[in-house]
Length: 226
Length: 198
Image (cartoon, rainbow over all chains, first blue to last red; front, side, top):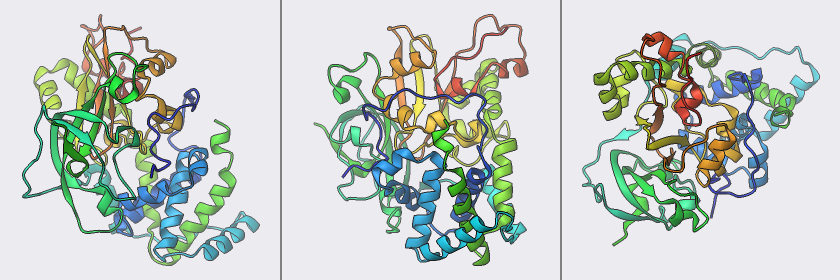
């Protein structure tokens, strides 16, 4: 199954529209959506992979028609409902209250120590790197075929690369496999590799010359090409 | 872009509903949301990346460290954080031009470039840049020689990429701050070159 998010190579999408002097957030709700999602991520309500998978389950037509923060909002709402944190009925009811009374304030609850923690993460980061005892299966120069994890659901292998052969050009650290963490399965550390794919091998004879694609791929997606 | 944001009122109400319910259930800190928004609106942006690039242009040792392991290198300049925990810098040369995308969502090195512009997140850019990078770059105003290899980096895992643009000619007399002023966000994504001094 190809998720609507796997857009690489999709034809017929039209020109790229540039917005001059674009603000970081176009309106208050975009900023609040960004802030709420990141705050509850730090709170541990769900992982970033669960959040991405929630967005990827937006129906395909809606997915491409929603704005970026529209997808965040839709994904956030879906995961909060699925996890039993909120119900659709109470969101609808609360939304009607705000629609009827535009002056109705959003209640506040401050938690300065938690806000400090969130900002520390913003400025210091949080690594998805993992230790693993497993030996690396591949080295720079190896030819590999990108197969995917073999299970339906969230994946970080774009559809255009599935079944394609590439060359390992860089060996990266091990990271938690997003396919597993999106399902709240046990942490599954996987070595990561940067692969180089030649454009004509992926796109065929009409590919632009000298335009290779580089992709970061988890080891479990790969098998040797030779 | 009118279409993109036309549903603002529905979405504004929906977000208010989510925020108020999460606050009342004790799951959301309002001040954390305020400070997240302020950090990305007012502080974390492409000036960070521009400082990194300008330093690399004037300091060969720093440039080497940046190309070997970018995350500790930028930390020396006091720059780092979310979405740059595993940063890789890609050097543009006369033979190689690098351009970055995330076809699956919109991964982007927040700590050095801030939050991404709408076009970077658009289905059109995500769909097209991997398959026709020369055409897309030309459409965005960057014509590359046919001899130049265009490398498209699809940020599909935890690595985030920063393009190190070429230093423009005629900038020998500029200091580091002046050089940083030539380094645009688009040059660090790889859809433009650094500006030429006026």
